[in-house]
Image 1 (cartoon, rainbow, N blue to C red):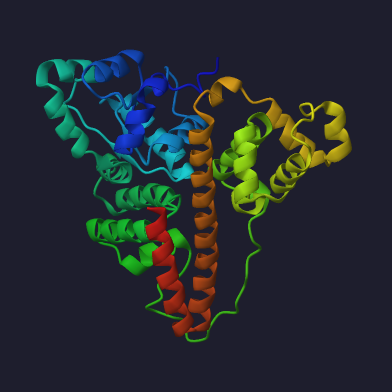
Image 2: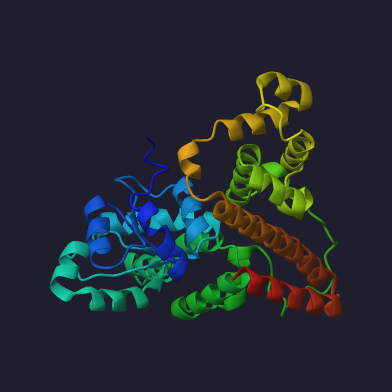
Length: 357
């Protein structure tokens, strides 16, 4: 039993998460039970621990958005912003449900009822907005105070994966603190505003593409789960053969492991240590050891549904990688003044952002 992996109420709430696209995350069992009784089965509890990356990856399989409902005191705010960091790292949008001071879900539902609580769900604010408000309020209005607040907010804005979302937050923050938007943009992103190009174009520097080790955890986790299903379920094996290894796996070593497994006859015995030593390289054996050591309880859901979720996660990762590539090409086009190419790349980026949303 690992608290960092388990979400209390997940089994009962996952279908409602899929239906609504939202998961409500609370801190304690009693909060989760109160919400479930009131008709909000999409609520889960973190079992007395902070939200972890493993929690976030589980949520990402079922929901498109996370609604955070922690205590309304200072400790609850800190827990909310720690959860924000974790969720931003996985690319899962998050918003904050606000209750009246001193209220918890149980007392709020008892006194105000489910319909009023449903209105609070609809009024949930993006967690970044809440963080910006709290950070500005925590610092005085002096120049030094504003500077410290902007630095703290800039650190979080750098974590946003969506350039458009980050740009909108930068614009709003610049207006609130009275800063020049291009200066704030440069401070946060490390590049100058395209409206003020340098007289002499900077030389084009291409960064190396990300390696498998730099691969975001969500995409890697989906591939590992697909490998597990490939090893253990004949129907999934047939689906992978039909759709093709190239379309379902991104990492080179994982792709090679999947292809080799498919090359073994179906009637062969399960993978053994000897076969792993004979057929796979050192890194590939590490991957297989991880797959074969997975907790079977995490795969109790219907394999076809799991396969679909994993395939969707891999497709999202493909789009994220394409988006990252476009960001680099856009930087190079800006630097070289290739405005026609820049317009085409920006249009392609907009289309990919739409697909990801």
